Length: 278
Picture (cartoon, rainbow, N blue to C red):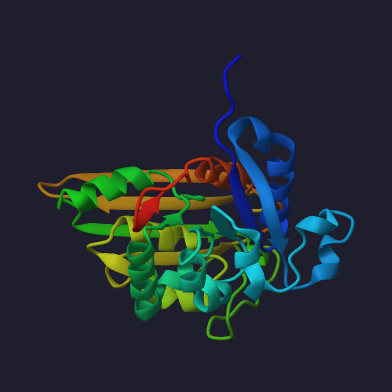
């Protein structure tokens, strides 16, 4: 009989749809792959009642270090990354499920410095991004010249700030909501453009200012989200991918992204003081 891998203690920060999925998956399937729950935190504690064992509920996120985690997974909001990311990295590896927070250049630098200082890894999950490792290889070899990402969803799937009009009517069809750099897009739709933020991390030499993105509202997309990626290299090279991610109407996260997060979590076993796309 094969020995089980060493167990990693996982802290889950956020108990929305994605957080619930990860908690349930660790409880059900974590043992054979070496994952156990250390804690679950949510802003509204009552949401976890009856769904999370009392001993795993963390009432105050500031006391996370008492649970001695190997990996902390944030799946709630960029503000948590801003407030706790550096502290998380001083104790644990950190998987940031809201990489739109990294569009803040100062925060991005502080997180990278904390990872290096403490020998921890800042993990950025691939999520809904297809071909992230290929983008990263092009970036690392110096041949990535441009990167463009378009995200198209039903308008009910967007959670936008007041700076972008979110009004819509059934049957209105396709409408471009915003086009510009990913650094401009992240504050406008922090819960919707994490895929673009992940791409900006992969394309580190272009960065959040250099990677271009577009968000599109389309009332015809009631069953899936569409993510298009166009990478450009030298001598006329280009690669264009189109990913259709099944989703429920009004859902921010597509169905295939849940399993993608789980696969990313399985990789979080420590890669030294750096940022790692998983």
